[in-house]
Length: 407
Image 1 (cartoon, rainbow, N blue to C red):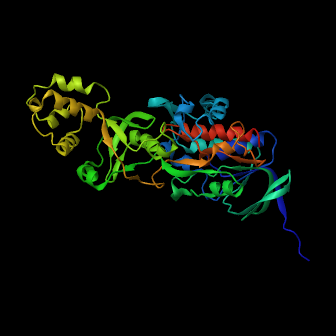
Image 2 (tube, rainbow, N blue to C red):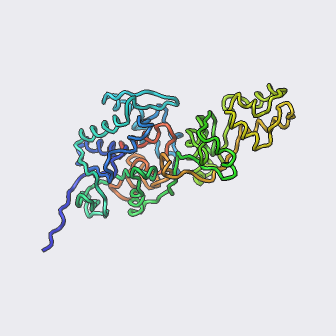
Image 3 (cartoon, helix red, strand yellow):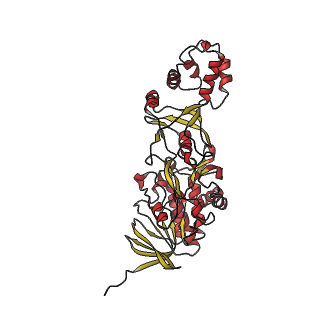
């Protein structure tokens, strides 16, 4: 006689013990729900641990929908409004974690990102959350009652739940465990996926361009980069493959999003090498200089870059030999250096994933699938991608909280 496999039943099962998953599990547990959180990793929340240079840029003081990319840019408004940076800062303060503010409103731990992981683990303990880690999901099927809507076969046995929360993250940084599991679950239950792409990622240059600048690897300077609807001012960094630095990482999301529509993405990245002043006025004041243009530009730019940039354009003569029309062309080029990347360094170097579960299939209030009762998606797996600077963590906290209040 065959006996049916024993099933462990929970009110809520959360797949993914990262930022969004732990917040969701803790909130659901504090509501009195019987919660299990499972993850295939052996180490808890590695992406939090390595973030912000090991100090976790856990939020930003200035968060709004303009800091996010999505096919549906209004979707994130509700969750972000109901769980704000102030809420998370309050949680950090209650746990006695020291933190500090850096430029652009970015908040970091004084000591270690491990403080945030420990805090979230403690919050889960307060909610009496159960853990299964490491735990591999082998199969997932729909159940037959409101109490067992989902049946999971796992390396910890057969599990059942009324609410299933998918907090599996995106595809970025595969070496710490990123997988497409969340997208596969969405597709299994009929939800659309916006094609994922690496975001906040270094850009590569075509060979002819790389040949000019590859010797500048490691050089960085202040610049403004624009791509589509995105405009940022931070450091630009040359690499042996192309361009990086915060300003390029920011622009990369818009370059990757060029198929989101004309308002979002662009095929070129335009760099203003003189972000702090009017370059034509600056050149006009020095129009009679007998210095080579490249030498003159070293007042504002690194010498080797100025030389390479001028040589590429044939502008390697004394400044006073340029006429007014030529100076206009130089000013235009300096304030609008047009770069056409030929790719990115991929998910291995990407901080986040652009695209994901189509938000049109989800409730913006609860993160629940509109056509699949009890199925929720939170965090990076959803088609909501933040700028660099704590915005993606804030989306994780806010979306996790929203689902934790409803699951």
